Image (tube, rainbow, N blue to C red; front, side, top):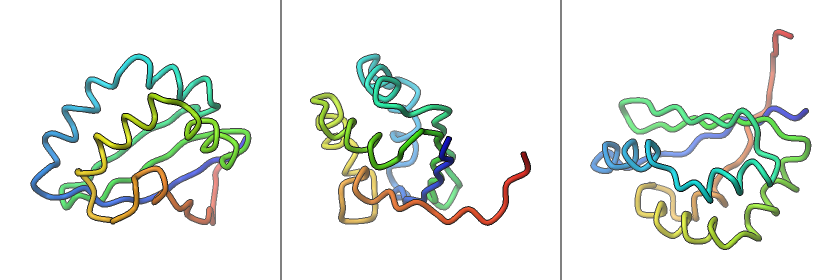
Amino acid sequence: MQRVCFLLKVRADRQDEYRRRHAEVWPEMLAALSDSGWHNYSLFLREDGLLVGYLETEDFDAAREAMAATEVNGRWQREMAEFFEQPEAPDEAMVPLTEVFHLA
């Protein structure tokens, strides 16, 4: 199982709405994530807008491709793009960090 961690930056003026949207993730989006191999997926938001994402998957590239092929992901990404500081779409800006330690 691959452990994947990535960082994004949420705009300071959009953090409250970002939290609200993630308290109400569409059921079809949740199903698509699970069906695409995203497991133990968590997002952590720091006060300055730093967003830390973590997930476990068999193959991150395959999981991303599977999500990209879903209609619901396209809709979600378009709606969420305005929340982020980076110019790329959120799912394209997820660059995995290098794991340097893991306590098994």
